[in-house]
Amino acid sequence: KQNSKTGNGDIDWCLYKYRHLVENAFARLKHFRAIATRYDKLKLQFESMLALACAMIWLPM
Image (tube, rainbow, N blue to C red; front, side):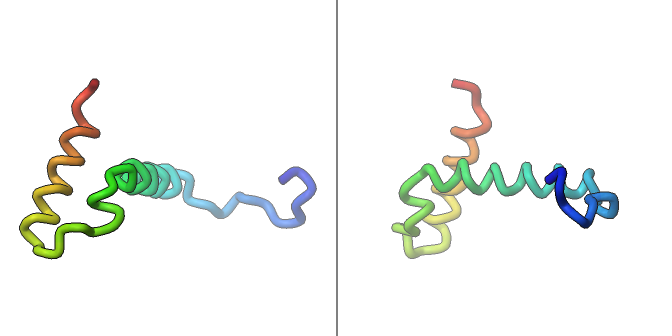
């Protein structure tokens, strides 16, 4: 904020940028209901659904 008494001079903006990208990726993955609610109890099925969701996000539609 402009009226803040402490500045943002000591923030690592490059690290902040990458953290923001990771947080956005998790937010997009949570749009898939099966991943957000963990319907698949087996590790293999959950990882398969996660890979499918990542592929759907990655591919342009």
